[in-house]
Image 1 (cartoon, one colour):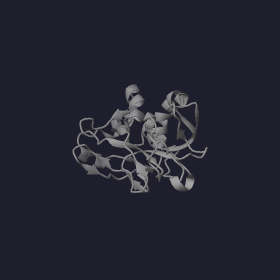
Image 2 (cartoon, one colour; image 1 turned 90 degrees about the horizontal axis):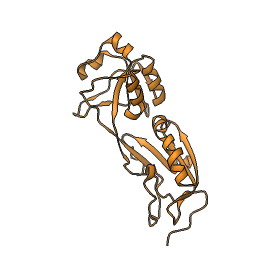
Image 3 (cartoon, one colour; image 1 turned 90 degrees about the vertical axis):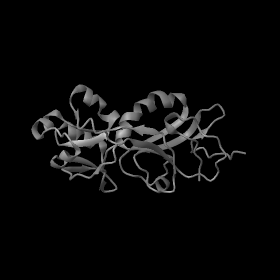
Image 4 (cartoon, one colour; image 1 turned 30 degrees about the vertical axis):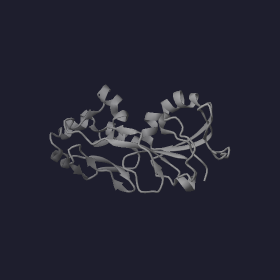
Length: 219
């Protein structure tokens, strides 16, 4: 028998809909990409669900802070939590045309050493440039931040090169506000995962895979 869930947790009803409260955290760049779909598609499909979303680049303590689900892009730390792969997201190395007109357009990865870089800090460490051919670089940073939205704004304001998720920069590439750097040297795609709190009883059936939400149980 499936154990009865306390009302504060999101549970899968017999009709396939979720009900209760679901506490989710995700980084700002994923929030920018996903929240429209969550609000317009996911919530109407689950009218009995109450969603609490924390959009932050801070790596939260899911257990201590009571989060049920964390959406993450990139390698997952060994945390003891349940991780499931949702898919992959391309990365793009971008800069403003004005910056590139001033500093020059790199032709090879080795040319990146002479450029200003806006680096993303994950756990106080800069996220490296990882190319699909296996090349790995950690260039010197002109600006190091732990917020993807700030990275985007900095690149738009000509501060340097930034490595960002394709869905985040796509409209700015289309408008000409940003330009892709080294388009022939493809960056490695990053995995997008939901982290769940570990469950003791796994007999319950999983929820539909909309946005990677799975049935969650209380401790």
